[in-house]
Image 1: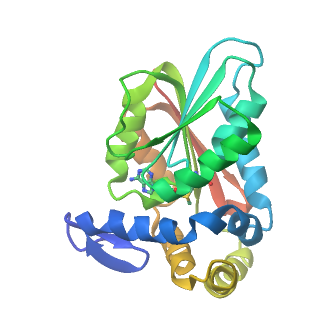
Image 2 (image 1 turned 90 degrees about the horizontal axis):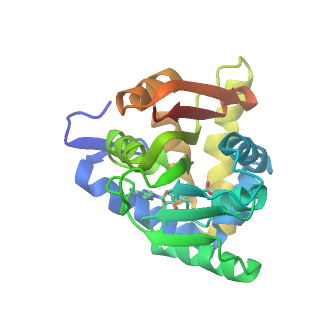
Length: 252
Ligand SMILES: C[S@@+](CC[C@H](N)C(=O)[O-])C[C@H]1O[C@@H](n2cnc3c(N)ncnc32)[C@H](O)[C@@H]1O
């Protein structure tokens, strides 16, 4: 736990709460251009299956019924593009992210696809630049553990969701399978920073990634935070032995 309410952690380091965002921004500015490639390499493609599970849970309508998704900390737009592909003609997605470098990669991807259904907006998960109750679903994938004030981001997700809308959060979790946990630690602390150095030139960014996963609340504790933010019917589904979990809550 951080030493005081004005401190938090950046990976395994304790830092003043107000310093964390700039440190996180430095990480994602550094890796933005290689971020998508690194996801595939690091997770040996598994992130695609985890994201597919998220998109299945979003369940956008297949017809032309209007459906508005907000993907918070959406980075290069991976979740947004997948939801647009899964949905019908009425599906629209807004990606909000604090990092202009990640959004720039996302905009290039959208241009290549010729897709106007995804909008990219710079903004902070802790103070979303959107009206109350303006989205049918809010997602956040591998983003929440980077946000300094997680409780505030959850409250904001709840505020912008319409009544009856669903919040879905995909995040690294806690591996509890004997044997797999030791293997996972070995892979995380040795292979991932080395891979990060080879592909992006920045081993530290990927050391932060691994450490931040270990500092993230265990799934039951995180589910309790989602409930405190006002969500109902809160649940979570561990995947790949607990490497990640898909958390869900409804605004009712
Ligand atoms: C690991 S990436 C995840 C990107 C994308 N969701 C995905 O699954 O590929 C984490 C993202 O969180 C963003 N982020 C960090 N702090 C944020 C904040 N306070 N508000 C919005 N986005 C934030 C970073 O800029 C980065 O793009």
